[in-house]
Image (cartoon, rainbow, N blue to C red; front, top):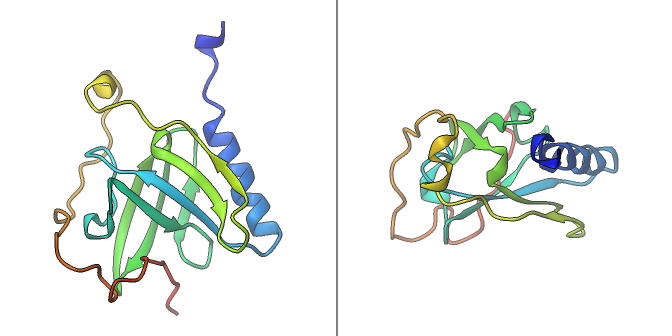
Length: 143
């Protein structure tokens, strides 16, 4: 019977996002990146990206049972972000580090039986210096 139950991950991600928001904290997610994840590849380091998913930093944020989707600006350029929910490996509050980590997603070849996600149009990761002068990438809302 347990095999038929949906994953608890999307419910926990939504709950921790709400907890952060309700208490004035900034929710960050850590994402395991592969070809199924649509994020700006130039900000990916060691196969992961850390994203600010606060309502101030995103537009149209949606955390559903299958994915996390939103629009955000990276280096002043608006980009669409699509993350399969199993690729969210942690969610935490930036200010105090409280949150939760999850098991990493299965390798792409094991997940090939799953429905495909939208293809990523972003350029491949660069081996050059980090954008923004070596600092960690951070989403900010520009009005």
